[in-house]
Image (tube, rainbow, N blue to C red; front, side, top):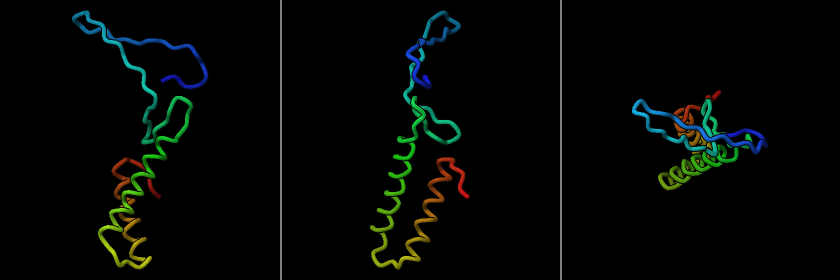
Length: 93
């Protein structure tokens, strides 16, 4: 991954002990400290994944429980969100 507007691209490779050369593929994004960042230092993909997970949690709650008041819904949503975010290694306060 190259950060910034530089057009200079280097190809990296590794040489194994038997002498064969393996090229290292360039990635479009990297995960560091649980945050997904692309070459332009955008978090759009990271935010998209979190939103998809949150929408999935809401769908599970809606399908499972048809008659919930707002307090019960919020309690379930916060608990499931906490479990999901800790699974992905995010720090929640």
